[in-house]
Each structure stands twice: as C-alpha cells, then as structure tokens.
Image 1 (tube, rainbow, N blue to C red):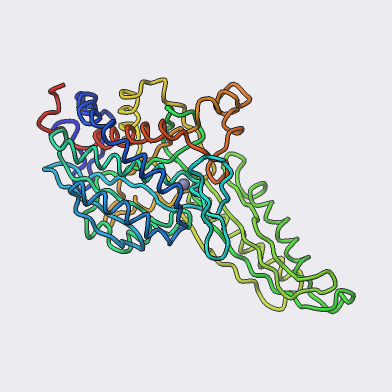
Image 2: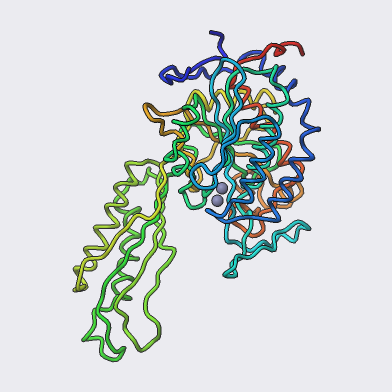
Length: 448
Ligand SMILES: [Zn+2]
Ligand SMILES: [Zn+2]
C-alpha cells in the first residue's frame, strides 16, 4: 500500500496526515479541465441563486444536480432521505470518498442588489434566498464531480457525490443516513464538506478538532392561569413566569459552565398573550443552544429543563412545563489526521499564505451526522472557503481577519454576496484537491 492509500472500508486504519508526493501533479492534470467546466458551474449557480428552495422543498435543485451527474456517467439515485441525490462513480480499487454539498436556502429577503438576486417568495409570502451560500456548495460539488469524471485516469477509488437537502433544518443529513445512505452505497472512508465563509476570496480556513459547535433548539411551553389584567391575584401570570425563566437561563453559561467552556444559550422567541388587559394562560419560549462539546450540551439541556420546572413550581403553575428538543446536531469534529491531510493538500495547491488560522465560530451544521457509521465512526473533514470580494474586504474596517470579518456580510444575512467567479473557481479547486488527496493515484498521475 502506498501512502496515499489508507483506511480501507473497515475504517480502523487511520489516515496519514501527509498526502502523496504526486498530489500536485495529479491535481494539475485534473484541474486542466476547470476552465471547460466552469461555464456550466456558473450557469448552475446563477440558476440556483435565482431559484432558491427552502429546506424540504429542494425538488427542483435536486433535479438540476441529478440530471448533470447522470450526463457525466454517475449512477444516480434520487429521493434519498427526502430530496437527497447520490451520484456514484466507481473507478477501480481505492478508498470511497463522499463529497457533500448542501442544497437548501433560507427564509431571508435578499438585499444584495445583484442582477441575479432572488425575488422568490413562498406561497405564504416569505422571501427565500440562498443566504448561506449553499448554491456555491452545490455548484462546486457538481463542478468537482465533472472534473473527476473527465479525468478518471488520474485517480482510483469510488466517489460518492451527495447533494443533501434540509441542512438548515438540521434534519437532511440524518434523513439520508436513516434512508440507508451507507447501507445502499457503501460506508465511505472519508467524508469531505466545505462551507462558504465571509473571508477574502482565495483564502481557506481549516480548524483542527472542533470545526463547528454542536447545537440544539428547545421549545418550552409554560403554563399559567389566565385572568383579567386588572385582577392579577386570580392569575398565574405566564409572562412573569417566562421572564423569570429567560433571566435564569442566562445563568447556565455564566454560573454552571466553566469560563473555559464556550457555549451559547439564546432565547430567540418569547410569545405570550394577546393584549394589555388580558393575562394569558400560556407562554412559549424557543431557545437555541451551542456548545463546543456534546457532554456540555447534555448538561445545558438538563439545566434548561430544571430551570423551566423550578420556575414553574415557584410561580404556582397549574402543571409542569413541556420542554422539548426540536432539533439537535452534534459537534462538528474533524478527524485530526484527515483534516491535516486536506490542509496540507490545500497548502500545496493554493500556497501556505492562502490558509488562515482556524478559529472556532458558534455556527453549527448537520454535517457531523455523516461521521456516524454503522459500525465505527467515519472520518470527516470540513473546511471554510472565503467568498468575500476583495474590494469589500479591503473596505472593511480593521487590520486582522478577526477584526474585518465582523464588518462584512456573512451567512444568513440578506447582504451575503459571494464573489461569483472567484468563489466558484476556488470552491471547485478546493473540493477537487481534497478529493484527490484521499483517492489513490491513477495511471497518468505522474505524467505531468
Ligand atoms: Zn446556514
Ligand atoms: Zn450553511
């Protein structure tokens, strides 16, 4: 076995952190077709950007992906875990590498003013925008699939191209796995994913260990007793109860976790009552939780439940609250050696100056579900691709990337506007180079 080849499907062998010495030559061989592939990548991006689809509604997006993969010679399966698409390309002995791109958009109004800005609204009037850059991910996934299909002499192994739905709902990855993704198509030896970031286009960020925090959404229904607003003595006021819960939840991070543990507890939604002179009988809170560690998340969730129950008891609530975790995703933890291997490959291809130091943000992803193999954990690597136009970056106040990044539009903003040409080119290159860093070398791999 040469050192490009690792981790056969049994998965108990670890990846080596060093890509094979001929990686750059193989990448050059494959990426010589990039200029030929980019016009279709760009057309797909423009089309997806103008036709964004919310989580669970990605039929059109999935069809665009599936038709292209079929035309390239992939064995394509549609409808995997909802609108998920899987393209399979077997190309000799070697590792199975899963390339994942998420496809869904967000209920955000686009304010970029771009000529191809989304004007889409749902039937019930909500604006829809690719505000998280998943159109970039999908277009680059298809571009990489095309490059690998055109250059089968430069690699060996199996490529699984996965267009994933419903990432923003944190449900799509799990739905694809529960629909037998690994049972039907094979457990991969590596799963690779990339996300756009508000960093300068042409830069990349890899973080060892935790790439993104784990998350949970919690819905708390608090029960009071309604009354006339002028007769509070007859009520159990759920607004006061809810307010106490909101305040006490602030003590979880400050008093129950170590100052060295990063975590967030935010009450994003608090709804109760209908008018000033009526005390209602219920309050609804929706809370988002982020932690750097899955055990800390379990402690935070237990504390939320305890506080909701304790405050309900203190208020004389007629019944205990309902506390429900409505969405959850684990910490997005990179396989250490695989991440180093990908970063080394990117450093070789883009030059070390293109790689920024890894910083932990508080965003989350359902990508870590792909690490949950049927018998053993599957190595995953996830990195960030800078997409901010260089002029926008230059104008942003500050000198260091950490200062500047807070002043440029980022994911989930209506102003998030990736540099179209640069993002697509660099996104295709980074995913292709990463894939080649995991696949075996082919017959012509050292001809260049
Ligand atoms: Zn998002
Ligand atoms: Zn996203």
